[in-house]
Image 1 (cartoon, rainbow, N blue to C red):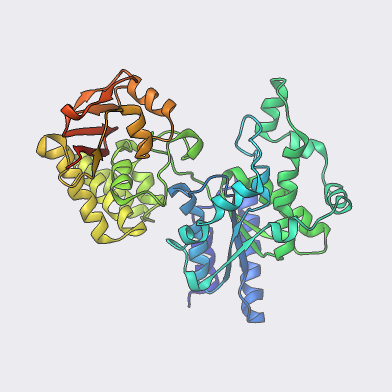
Image 2 (cartoon, rainbow, N blue to C red):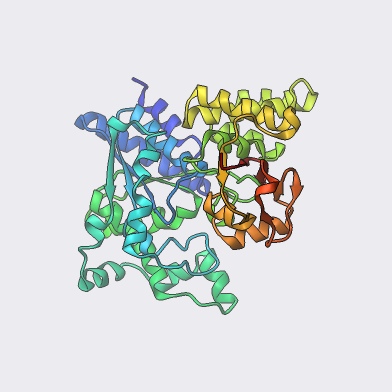
Length: 412
């Protein structure tokens, strides 16, 4: 078993607070908690919350999951908390406008597979899964008033995203202020020792959670705030489903492989660091190899894509994904050998085929892709939404983007 100091080094790795004094305070408090827990013969209670605003988690979420996994491997009690109640509002922390409010039915449907996705990283047998409507839904208005009395409006309005909206004369809705209050109460309800989160959660964890715990007679939790965010497939902006630059954990192996391959070369180092957990020495060797020409960027990225697909699927899936990638981009005129077939019985518009086969989410998305030359029929761009596939055109290959193909064939 690692020593206390070795545990602290592992658990604080990657944590940043924007203030050296705060980091030192959290490090000291974590060390104290570990010593006390060891003497008492109990594990630390640790959690991180994930709001099911959408149905899938993405690679960016796995950064905090890997930190939870480190706590698990050191024998601590880890909770994967699904924000079944906080999702109704949505976290305003990194948003420049109010989020749309979801219904309970939407949240429940989105949350349906969250724990299974989490088990791609976390140990299924060592993970406690909870939903925060368990305690938040039972609070009455008097409870909310008592909790809210521990904060001032100014504490919330000085937050950067709220301040920008206030200065710009844009609306800040009262319910948005409740989010930090609710997340703070998550810590109280679970009597947690440690909460893990990203930079956008700094206020919710370090201020709201600790302050509420202290006000209600608990010892304030240690905040482990991860310092770096994973950029999306654009290589620039933090990975986000709302921006469309995300790589879902549930993506099919071929799609996941292709999305990793689309990440700009400049982002490869941070993907190796945050997703594969490479050490500073490994990262330096990678960067030196790329700079000297010893390593080819495309080969490095292929290795990265294989490893990521192997983590979330299997090594066999990773090999099959690379094989298909090679077929599309290195041989066979750009067409994969194993594309699915779809029987066409009557003439049908390309837009309708794309929607029916769920190659796009809507007709408007299909039309937008057509405007961008993102839809091809027999390798020729389809730019007219009225384009129709007739029986005399079959067989034909329909392609969306670089990775979605279907072979259209006539009914036998």
